[in-house]
Image (cartoon, rainbow, N blue to C red; front, top):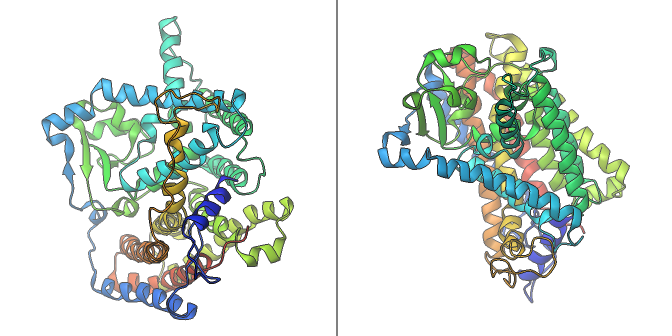
Length: 499
């Protein structure tokens, strides 16, 4: 698909006359690492282990310690509050989201069926990669710009004006035993389309998939209720909500009464609950700056499928990297059936390994509140920084190079020779970053992501076990798991790309 085009472009852009067969993976150039492979793998693993040692001195035991971190309310700045809450800005973003939604669908259905169509680049590069990075590094804007939510809100508003006072939501009871398993299933289908389906880059196929997902989402919102479906069952809302917890911003509600009718947060601890944020009075809302990743350490309600969703995300980015290595080529010979098994089996394998290490952690820690399910659900959040780090390491050169194509495509979205904004003739710059920088930055991202994960796992264990000594013992299995994944991630990045 388009990722392979990006890889080829990068390989050409970084070509050097004296280049040798070399290492480096993930839409980047080939590059000979200056040290033996085993040494850099062990060195990175040692860095993760060393980061764990100071945590032995970390002994906060207060019940609400997870909520006690420095934050600064941006709404406390009057002019900034007026800007960020203005109807013109918020309405403009919603309108832009819907316009882009229809542009992708129309371009996919009637536009040129090549890479000159805006649909593949916008969906796979600008939205999936670029918006994911924006969510992790800035904050979760998806509840604001989700086009399916915007369209449903508009339709409900129209229905009420026409006399349907109850709107379009039937609010049928949702089987709680299902938890977020529907989101897990939908996300697995998305991973299959991205990595296995041969026509994933064809604009018309993209339009059909978008329309099919639109029907599923609108039906879910109408049948079970908008908030019920989006909060726990719509795959992309769950996904962006998870990685948005890593971001250095949060929304918070100060009025505890607002949370009484919400089953997604605890009264008085309403952080990043957009349902409560919308219902709260303007003076009860906060938009805070906070340290990155602290949102992943906040207590979360245990829902069936919660840990599985995190594992699927982690397995998905890992499989995407493994897909283009010589080892995978030898194993599966790239047939659709074996690639499909590659989408299904890694999450199951990852989940089994993860649950085994969680049980070891719980036993070494002497048990704790909530039992095994609570431990499994809580520790899953410590894996999010690993998934984000690997995704950034694997995709950021793809975004930098292939992402430039959107500049020309916005002027000619259907590939019909238009030049709406005067940018149709833009030529991408391929030599933005050097091969050496790409390699070292990928390694740094992987190691930093795992170090943050180690810190979060220890913080979560303190919250669950209430005792520094027990928490420290419980972290030995999780540390081993993260070191093993550090080595695995870097080994995949070190493999040559197979076309």
